[in-house]
Length: 295
Length: 323
Image (cartoon, rainbow over all chains, first blue to last red; front, side, top):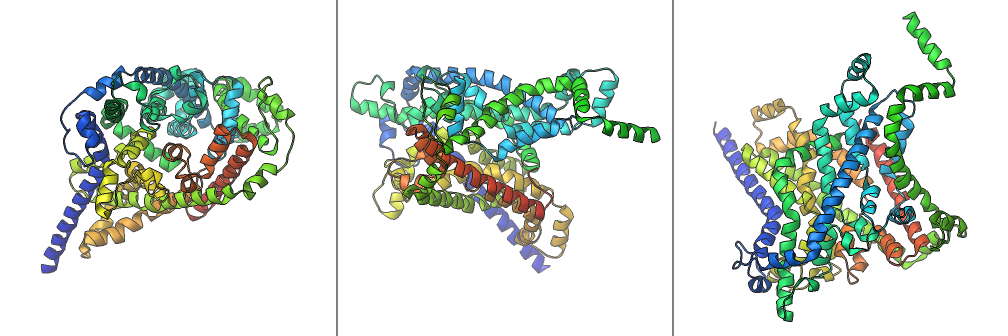
């Protein structure tokens, strides 16, 4: 009896320590974003001198948001990213549905060889240089297409899609065919509506991929008018290129504002994801599991 | 039954051409819709992969001619660029950096998600559990550019992390990303920060699949929480851990260039330059096409070999393999 109560006491202790460590882990995960949020609404003169962890904004000023919104590249970047998002999403989803459905049809003569080619691309690639030269040769550099076509199909998502279609009972096809439905009717009227959760997961994966991508833009796009948001952010955050963003007169003012502009631009660019994320989380998690199990 | 066998027999007797024709006749809509997908893989997988041939040639871009013409017209040089790479001082350096960065990432990035999953599973209150999950998965969705931007800001000589560390050690604060011995820790820690929560999902799912009776039995035998974790939870997820480890090893030399390009600078290159960033530097910056392609080819071959080996081992040990 005594032993048991000792046991339950130590279990409670383990539980408390556990909850505390997880709380610290959460703090570590979320504090950088909170700091950025507070810093972005702080008084520029105060935040630039600050070297400490803060738990509330230092003063209050919307100055950095004003400067960042007055900087035309942010608007340009947003616009480009949205345009690319629409074209890319439409194309990617269509191709992924078509490819995934095809790969799930086991009785086709060319299903196997085509699947092998597609899966092979996950294991071997020409690498970045031949990719660059190919895109150049096709002649789409410095157009939106350079940011859409080379990443149009994500093989991992394609496999997820196939797994989704694989989960449908084969009798579905047979009975539909007996009823005289053609391949396209079976695909779009029957199968696609049945795998909506998988579609949602894949659409979300593509959306995040498109929203976050910057590298292809950095090598395929020279025209600043076509910069996606992430490339604009790279200039602000990594290359420290904010001089053109402020109209402030003195050097000191410029430096001050360029510091806070970093914070406000992070918030402006990350806000859509942060707002949508809590609602979409369960879909992401579902996808991560299917992907991990089925690879 | 007999009829069916006859039918099967008949099917086998059809020649390849006849079967192909029949297949095409009845399934042409499916082939039609897969055509754009095939075109994608032709243009962005097969073409680039065939483009690796320039690693064995003296490829230059003559603007007046097409890419294909430039490839065909350039002279064969055999293994010249591979030899040049293997013989250069960069070979040892980038290989060493690649191995160090990937091993450190593995050493920190592999156990932490397992630990996290076990801890999350121990939380009794469901709302708190969900909160922990939501918050720890969050960094995964922040864009790489923003993550690197935050890292850069926090580790600058006036950044909060840099100043905090200098208070701990008594040294004066420095721009940490200019210190070549700090590059790997910064890279690895920011990687763990961003991915640990997300990577814990798979282990959490594996833990959920463990039979609850085993915990009950352990409790009856007088095992406390820690013992239950050690004797029930851990053994229960060992298969998952094994597979994930094998896959991680398979991806080992596949250190991506994107994050390193965002974080490194000339001062940290001695420890930060990996094979993939070296390819980027020599090819896309210095336009040394054939040499850079040879370096990239070397990387692709090594990666391919590792993945295949990992997969074979994975299949031997368990039923799980990538294909």
